[in-house]
Length: 141
Image 1 (tube, rainbow, N blue to C red):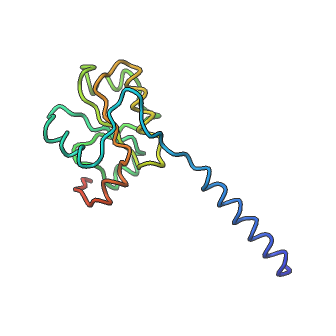
Image 2: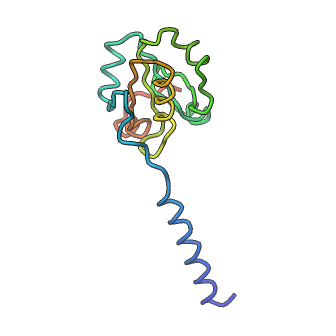
Image 3: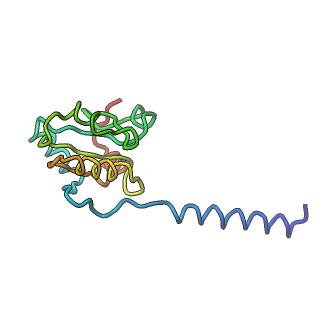
């Protein structure tokens, strides 16, 4: 293949891949009805609210590689009203949702679903797994 054609093909592939990365979704800044928390506030909630239910909205493979201690894995696409009710019988039970971080929509979607089903104490850790591991906080496997 001629160098000019090879360069043109490579450049085209670069532009396509850069465009795909630029279009990657970003989690919203807030979820109406949910309380936005950071990593330090997650620790405070765990310490001060023993009935807090931590819900990791990532895929099972990601959860298996590490998660916040005490979290249960419930991916947003698998979450149903009945399934959540089995975990949290009271709609006043505090629920905290997280996923991979600001480029992940799973936890914001899950929080919106829970709010729509009448749950009233929803916390959303937007920084998620990325913020947790950047701070080198404890990880469970």
